[in-house]
Image 1 (cartoon, rainbow, N blue to C red):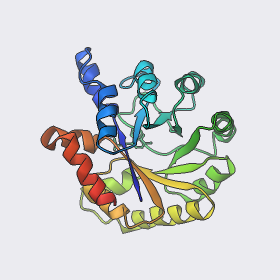
Image 2: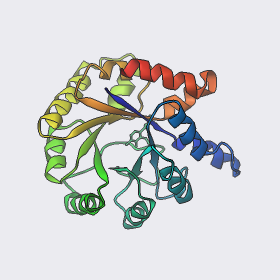
Image 3: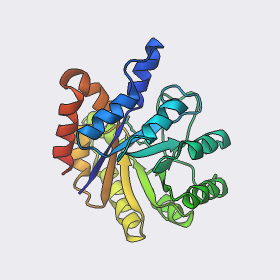
Image 4: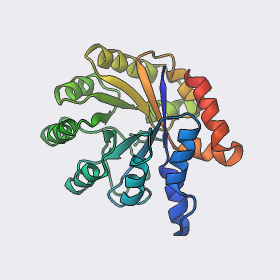
Length: 238
Ligand code: PXP
């Protein structure tokens, strides 16, 4: 069975736009759990532009819900993530001016720091994942650094699919990376920019166990409701 992790950052973005309490990302997490999805993703950004520490803490206290907390490698964020006690962490690159996470981690450049962050979470029995571009060297390096999982950045693939351009080369890259990752004992996740069509295509890769999807789910929910959109994704994924 493949899993869906719903990224609820955009619920917090909408709340913060008004500076009040509605819509509440904690209630969104509870709603998603009620609909049979047992994993949500939240990104505690350095500028706290959407999810705040208090949201993350409350979401992590929801019974029987797995929380995948995306974090950068900054000391302050790692310290706070340890206090928040998520089930999983996904280490992502972060650039203050970006609108969303633009690419995978530069593992080579940040090897030592990433390795020591992974070790800190491992000691706390928190599953670790690295958000990387579909590149074979980064898959091997993720294993060497001690990660449990890799999340393959699907942004380029998604954009090609959306713009009706040829995507077979990028698909093959993701497939080869997934294959290698699984063969060396890494769990494979995929995310970024995914919609119904791109997710359906990536479902042909058996090694991908988890999809983390946010913007499309929340955007589409404006028209069809979160319940319906989650159901549609569940049908596609399994
Ligand atoms: N996975 C990771 C690691 C991300 O950083 C993001 C964006 O926050 C997503 C998945 C979800 O991407 P999208 O909102 O484009 O579906």
